[in-house]
Image 1 (cartoon, rainbow, N blue to C red):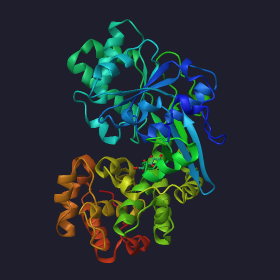
Image 2: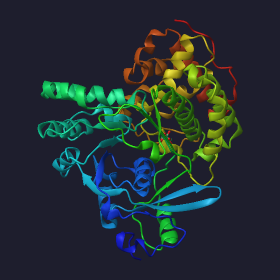
Image 3: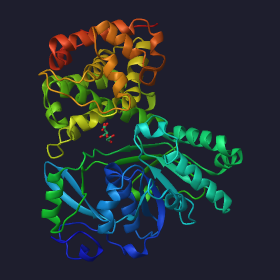
Image 4: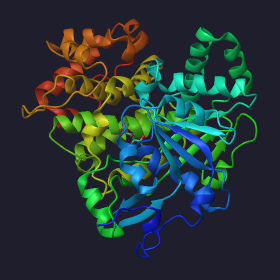
Length: 473
Ligand code: CS2
């Protein structure tokens, strides 16, 4: 079968949406660091829409920071790939044309730096995962950005807007702080220039994008009539909220479907504490109980009731400006989670828990405890993660612990509930200053014992019976 590429684009079946613009005229205005499935189903689609609206400045250069696999898959396809938008009504294929160039930082860091420093570059977007912000060593995103910005400064070019699109609270501020610290260490004048010329608006990004499977590849080939080495499947819903503070001219992101706001923090808190918190809870409780996907987990009545309780407890910790929206947000999420066509694997979500838990569940748990509000649901969800770290499901099968702290977590997760709770709470990266909450170790140990004795589904169903004792320590 022929391969998807510019030359085969015109012959695609009529029901496959495709770039309605001349790709050769699209210049590269955006550099993306971390070109994975989420980016290709989210920001790249927004820039594809912008290109289709007749503004040719928004082509993408996509850089991989670790492996060459994406370049190897998409370079022979001229950067084209199929987005398979799925729900109960079927699959709607769309070929996305915004990716004009694919780079591989470990092979040619200079090419990435040069692209950041190119005069036409207006924006850098990043999806480097939660753990990407820990790494400011050579070849990491922060080092590439610092080198690119230094070259821009030397060439007398303007600064840039850098958009972190990872699920972290204060993602823009975090990126800015890392970048500044790295520049300060090597070139204090560059750090000052970054303060003056570089903007890191916070963003909230949302679209559920399961990792690509061979079944997705087969479906893309069947629908397109050509092979696509790396299509991407996603739900119909997509949302991008961006703070309105850019370096220089604001990019027309509203025309690309984004919402521009003064402060993204309430949006970010709502998404992390409702959507992502429920995802992680379903992942750890569901995987222990032997379930495989989000739709299977949310169809289990005890888990669904648990998630609704989690949402109501988390909603009380949200900023007042969005608290009232939580019920409608949750109702919509139930529909998104139930999407029968996505087959979003719980083990995909379970990865990197030590980097995801703080902003998804630990923050809610600690805020609720400090305020004396009910919090048995986030408590049980954190205990479910701890249980997951011991590497066995309830039937004795193995569960993979894919986490930068895997060795420490596995060691801390073994033993009686009280000592496991204490050892886990001592992991600063996850729990921060929670050790000052004297009763938390006891409450976590109790929740962990319930999980071990009764199993995840029964524990989830024990409404409030675990510990929702207010604690003001
Ligand atoms: C998920 C997210 O894998 C995970 O941790 O919770 O990727 C989630 O699907 C997205 O944030 C949805 O926008």
